Image 1 (cartoon, helix red, strand yellow):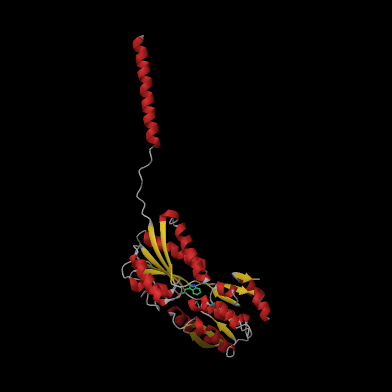
Image 2 (image 1 turned 90 degrees about the vertical axis):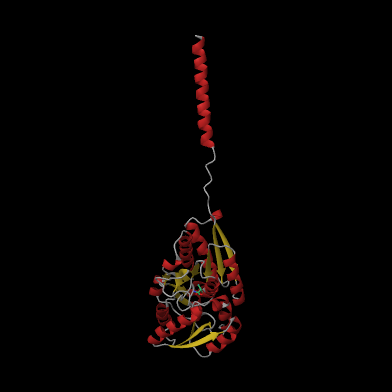
Length: 331
Ligand code: TRP
């Protein structure tokens, strides 16, 4: 009888001990998995609404791939359009121990490319990677550089100009002489425009300081102004618009932000989409893909953006079909 009670008590104790062991093992913190924080260096050439949208897109694309919060540390610099800052900041970003570096706009990517031959360099929205001497082959970059390219849909832009303003015969191309991305675009646009029976006169400015006087000269010589995907012009676009206030020539720029800021219309590549695609490519390279084997992602099809409000002011009627097919209409 006494033994039975003792056995009962012991059995009870055993159950208690086992249960408490199981319980404590369940609550033990899981062994910490070593999570490496991705370090991404970003150099933005200058501030203008399109590049700001691309940088936002890059962060969104990275987040979609899991690089968000404390999984990623972004080392961001902006050279404010200053070439000497491009050089020093590029060296700094390479020296800072980043896993890779990203150049937003051609001059930034070129600065990074000359600062390192080993660290991966990702191009964000580079119009002409070959013309800018960044890669030799878009399908097989070969070196430490790959990324996303925004090829200007020039042929569609020429068609749109002809549809909206059939009386335009001479177009002035306004761009920066210091940007490699613009030179090729101007040549391409000129070729399509001339094929369509238009005349193109080129007006290259060395810096933003010459924009106002150049636009004044242009407005007396041309029927319309065309602007490529050019950082210098984009960063001072309000000056283009104000210098054209009296002449009121239609302005055909190459990005949505410039149409919104007083351009008439364009066919454009979506800036946020470009950024997201860049963010995803950064993620691939962080996971081990080699830039040498990663083809450049080229965006070349555009959607039209129409500033209907401005068209009304200029007395231009936008055909219903154009409005129906437009990607965006500014009322
Ligand atoms: N593609 C430009 C370059 O190669 C950069 C850029 C992207 C840009 N989006 C833009 C410039 C919009 C002007 C407007 O440098």
